[in-house]
Length: 37
Image: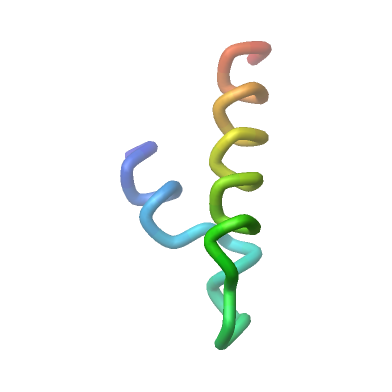
């Protein structure tokens, strides 16, 4: 289930051009939130 979330981040879903930097930032943020929660 987490793989799906990381595969296509919500923020990038509706954005045609989503940079790798943004993807990495979202993945890192999601990972940190996952650890905290």
